Length: 133
Image (tube, rainbow, N blue to C red; front, side, top):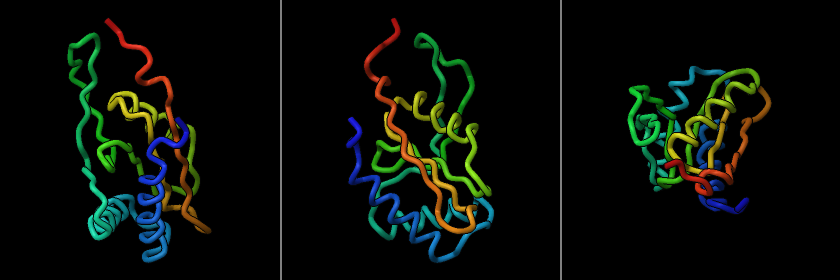
C-alpha cells in the first residue's frame, strides 16, 4: 500500500518545488495556496481547493466542517503551511482531514522553511478496513 498514488505524489511535489523555487520561502500561506493552484493548473494536474468536509457520526452529520487546502487527483489530501518547522499538530490536522475524507494518502507541505521545501507523505492503511454500523 505504500506505493499508493506514488506517481501522482511525484507530480504534486514537482509542482510544489516549482512554486518554492520560483517565489522562495516565508510568504503568507495564502500566497502559496494561490500559487500552487496556478501551478497545478499549468501542469494539468486535477485538483479541488478548499473543498469542505462534513464530519459524520453513525451516518448523521454533526455540523462541523473541515477544509483541507487541496484534493489532488481526487485522491490525495494536501495541507500546506508556511512555518519555520512542521509540528505534530500540523500532522494531526492532516490525519483528521484524511480520516474525514476517507482518503488514505496525504501530503503536508511547508513553504516556510528557509533552506528547502519541507514535506511529508502519509499513508493511513486502516481507513477502509473497518466500517462502523
